[in-house]
Length: 511
Ligand code: AHR
Image (cartoon, rainbow, N blue to C red):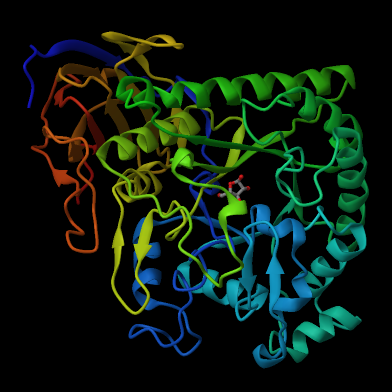
């Protein structure tokens, strides 16, 4: 497992070192009409497990176990050419269309109402995106009317005719997707998009004043538009939006594992730099309003393996970016989740991209099995255990020098406390490839606690291990020995290349 001596490390937590309250929507997911995300992913009439509506019950069950709180739909790049009307009404009458974003054939068998039904079964809050690539304010307002208006108007009555009497009450809406990107169908300049977003937001809010709106931020930190785009766009729509979106995909370049494992540091920087930009715009406007962040696409994605949409040939539900994730990817996802928790005072919503098959936490085969990828596990632990407020951990321990990033702590830590029951959760990734960390966690300020569980997912000498259809449990967390507390200190040995979720409860709590 390791040739090196364990390194000493120290973590101090205090109930008063609070970052902010965690919005449960921080643990969201994303379902795009892309590849096999929808078709043969969540929806496959004819699959042995299919419900009467055609949803895959095996995928539904895994989704519930994963525990996302919101699901963004229908894209992604897909939404920028989408006509939502194509996907509602009698399925036999829906048109097949060319999806120009992913050069695929969209049959529209699955649309808005199917997604809402699926999300209710999966116990997730639906979060919708409107097309601001090829369409504009009127179509977006029409969609809000169809979706959320109770009755009496043409589009609300159309929804009722389609069998949905009650409004869907969708609260969060994205104003387009990655509008600064040259690959986006209908890409815009910041000026064009800022004005369009402002007018679209105005109309959508006139239909339903209770909605929350997400304006597009720049598509990633390496874009030339990064930060300047946000500032210019918000000059137009600051007063009418609630969030700005942020996206990040990370991958391993040239087999540089230490750098890959340090990717979460870039997420920290991205959040902190855009937060500064948002506050700069507020300051220029002398505004007391805070625009927050919806990190509505993030994950590991081995983009170097994808030949791009130009390589595609208008197939229906092609196998697209079905990356297989190993233990290393799970550790990186763990650090990205930790970053979101540590910044929960400004990141209110986040969506791991994506749910099934397309860089998915879940994989499924047409007519065959569904299984958990390695990255499923840290997400499921955090979605279940991170409750209440995020704590600001003080961490002392070894650092590793990473090319281009400087000194990066080997221990990546996030912590939460639920004020309702006093429980504490600690999430730790050890990035060291060869050293365990002998870690002293000072919890003495919390009163008597006991450790309830320690879930561990470790490389154990093989960081390339991955789950497959043939071996779906190759990467699975295990219950490590539950560490005891002495004098308010927890001593835990954190294995090299491992993810750890540790849960503590006040000593009086029974479980
Ligand atoms: O998640 C895959 C794609 O990545 C999305 O469609 C797009 O928004 C992003 O570039």
